[in-house]
Image 1 (tube, rainbow, N blue to C red):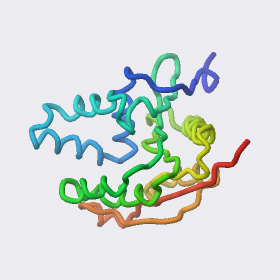
Image 2 (image 1 turned 135 degrees about the vertical axis):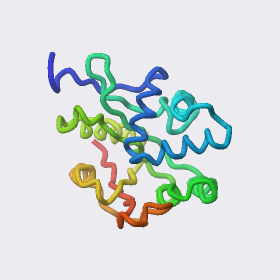
Image 3 (image 1 turned 90 degrees about the vertical axis):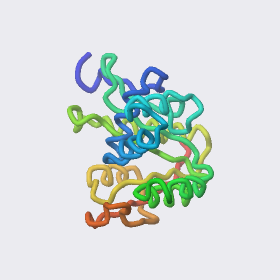
Image 4 (image 1 turned 90 degrees about the horizontal axis):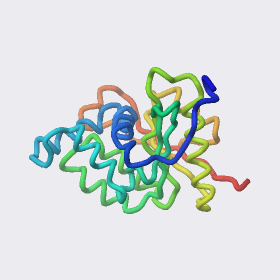
Length: 202
């Protein structure tokens, strides 16, 4: 099979950790890499990318491989997303206030989604965009939330990421809260949007 028919959405495995880290950084527009680099600066890691891979290879990490789905084309990862329940969001806000202020508004919005099924770090490699892969990943992640009987799904996205916002709106998401960029990003004039949708039973 070729083209779209060859794409499989499957649960991630530990061996997918490097791709999950790369896609997480793309989804955050570089914020994740800046955070990993701080770990190196503090002497907690030797290299930011190897540090990230180990984090995503941790089976118990809420953002790690055990909660991720990947889009696989002929054995190559071309996209991924993660789904989990938001818990203790306010603790994450406190952790980042002093160490990485750019993440603070993101985690403040995460905290406002506490108890929801949460779609996180969804992204597709640039070379394969425009083929409906993000929609397939999102639908599969929403199905996971439906199987777990969550009544609502939420996510955080940048206001200027118009293709993503259009995709989410096509699946019934609406903006229910927002916060401006922070930590040196303020000049961009953008906002982080908390978008939510009801998960309807089939």
